[in-house]
Image (cartoon, rainbow, N blue to C red; front, side, top):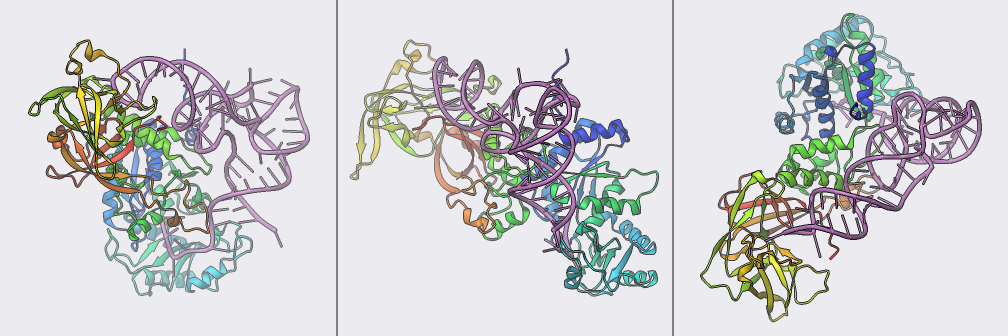
Length: 556
RNA sequence: UGGCCUAUGGUGUAACUGGCAACACAUCUGGUUUUGGUCCAGAAGAGUCUAGGUUCGAGCCCUAGUAGGCCAACCA
């Protein structure tokens, strides 16, 4: 009997194929290469899970490598945030690397390339270079500087390195072919002059390598076997291989670049540039705003590492355009939190209930189960008294029989407490219900074992004792965009689709056990949803964020 | 008059490299339940972009179309 084999995704198939042919298991090595110019988002989670997952599966090292070749956009704040997020997801990198660690090696190789006639310094404006690049359908033309002598190139490149060349004047270009069908092969730029301080190398360098030159060679230096990137880099592969050929030593492994489709999530955007725009325009408060699809935003919203990793695994990896529905992500959090989150009671839209036959000064501490899915979670005590809050929407003067809640003359079970019957209600001058007067069945206490306690009543409501309740600020969140794919229509700015009601702040009345809730703890507010203690929460001022609502099959 | 990539239920992935299209989410029924949650049972939903071809047999192979994506930053 062989266990049903889980089918391999196309990346794993490539590796299995390589293992059969030209690679040993020991040679396998991967990397996750973020640019520290923004925070990691749910799209990166797929890449992280892919690379680190492969590392776990094949017991191979995975480096965390910062692709920090552009000092104008990159900051160490982002480096720290990225490390925090990867760790939080539960992955351990083998080495912490930086492309900037390889600047000297890259420079030396570039000098070699100049000597071999594979690179030259171009002194044209960027406009002229762009002009000569041609278009996808027409060939490019050679730069007038293309055939400078090796000596002149060496001298000019040296001057660039020393900062003697002004920014924007000279660049180093690979000498390939201006007639190449692949535009990336039309003498791509390897170095530009940038007299900006770098977050790690300070002012040591006045020239910085471009992505194509730096990335592949970084893979090579670290001896990464498989370099996985997103689909838009597919045309870069030819150049990746071209550079590798110029640099590779006979006895070293040449990394292999392969591409997979980035994952898009419905009702949001996954692009650092667009996310940054949301922040700069004040549409969200920060990178870790709970509405953001960033790892840090999701953490603050109440997502767990397991839920994100499970999500990434369940959506798989492919090569076609895709938009994963938000409901699938929500399913993954609920699935995880259902097992882990303690159940508590809290009322978010209160309606006062008076139990008229319950003594004024009496209070009882009732037993409540912390998690029906997890017996080891234990029990806690809940205070009950004459005046309670229930949700406004849980009471109607009259309703049809599909309404399993409180209505005049009918009974309902108060979770973990008594069966009550609505006798009358009080209204204000506008006819709004302000109070419901009920009577309770004294023998019906939950768990008391009496006949009355075993009576079946259709509805069960959550509630909280008014005099014992603790109040908390509750952040309610909804999807950030009103349409599935905000960037689909190129004629409409994606910001037009922003959901103006994505955030609402209310006051909640919670059972007193929540008084000591700690930052980042997860709870299920019964019958409502999952909530997480916000990082700004204090014992003197609790703050909860709604992660996701409970699945609700009632079409009321 | 360019190159490269992709095309399977509403969504996302499968289909042992040719053998009557599977799984998850979403949807809809019913059951259990002191959460209209969870759990359990079940249903509906694609004949695999189109047209040819090879083959006893094609979602898988070939050809030609069609549709979508990417490529002309001194960004990554």
